[in-house]
Amino acid sequence: MNVPFNRVEATPHMVEAVTRSLSSGHWSGDGTFTAQVLEKLHQLMPEPLLLLTTSASQALEMAVVLAGIKAGDEVILPSYTYASCANAVLSAGGLPVFAAVSQETLCLAPESVERLMSPSVKAIMPVHYGGVPAEMDLLMTLCRERGLTLIEDAAQAIGSSWKGRALGTLGDFGAISFHDTKNVTSGEGGLLLVGADRKDLWEQAQILHQKGTDRLQFLQGHRDRYEWVGQGVSASPSELLMALLLPQLEAVEAINQRRLEIVGRYESVMKPLEISRNLILSHSKVSKGGNGHLFFLRFKDAGNAAAFMAFMAARGIDVRTHYQPLHASPQGRGFRHDPVLHSVGDRDLMKCVVRLPMSHHLKDEEIDYVCEVLKDALIHCHTRL
Ligand SMILES: Cc1ncc(COP(=O)(O)O)c(C=O)c1O
Image 1 (cartoon, protein in one colour):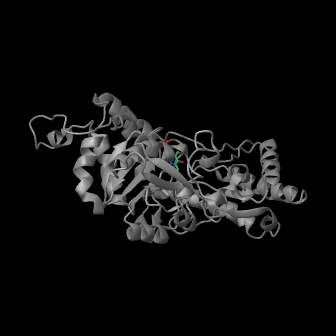
Image 2 (cartoon, helix red, strand yellow):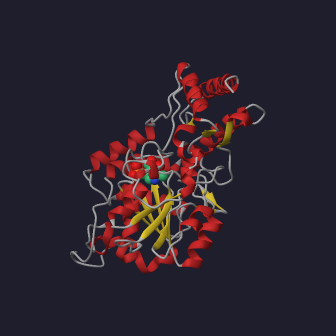
Image 3 (spheres, protein in one colour):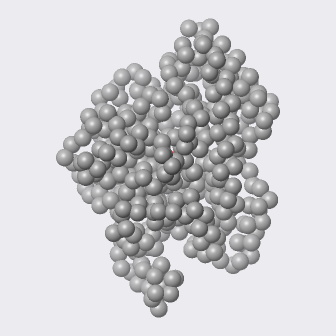
């Protein structure tokens, strides 16, 4: 049997919605599907201002502009993340500073953030890796005490929460992705969240989102025409994409539940297996508030991770590593970073993290098969020790 790493599938509801949007004649952004998507998102995240974008990368860039990051300002973010986080900082002339991640969750480690503090640091950008919350208590306290802006990269975290609050809504700004690797997807797409405590920036955010114009006021009937009033970007996603997204958002609880069920299945293979403790430093768990975005295994040793991947691939199971740490990437080498990142464990993170197949579209028999092979693969790797 072959099991893909991810599966993207159109349901009849999605086909019907996209067909309706096609025949509506309104293919650009800000139409009725966009309004319905925003309404659904507001049910999940009632407090912040929500602005749909064409990617989380773009939402992060907008957040950095709204945070007032200027040339020479530093923003601390995990080295273990996607390049978009650092690109967003650079786009405003800021400097990314790379921090370590905690072993358990692979999310930004607060003690590393503390080590990197300097008068130039203006913001912290934690990533909720795999849709599991970063250590928000400590990070929020740090930001409050030092007057720093908190930008949450919740790209993978639609429907996740921390102490009952949706991820992406805890900081000054948040970004969520609807890329087709995510739990709900419009192919490409994103969301910018501007926190309830930053209402002072809502008007600027809406102008930024509308190509620097007050068009939103016009659309809402408050003006008889609109004009260029500030800095802007072109961010509204097409109605066709919002039609694709809407039925998935309506099913987001069920989608996340199914993914968490799969996380639970994989976890149940690991738990009783004494040998996995010799091989693996940490792995995903069914955590409270998570959305089952991914399942990772962090091997102690890169050789065993490679042997594990080869074993799975030979049996038709597509498994993947993840981010190359940014401080070790060609574009990231010149920036300030935590010296801890030079330790073997952090340096080899990319080679040691392996993700298992994950999609709510995976069938029970596919998951059964992955679980069976996972157990054999761990036993195989253990014999190499
Ligand atoms: C942590 C993180 N941030 C940002 C992004 C960028 O998202 P998008 O593709 O929507 O721009 C990704 C993409 O996978 C991601 O994993």
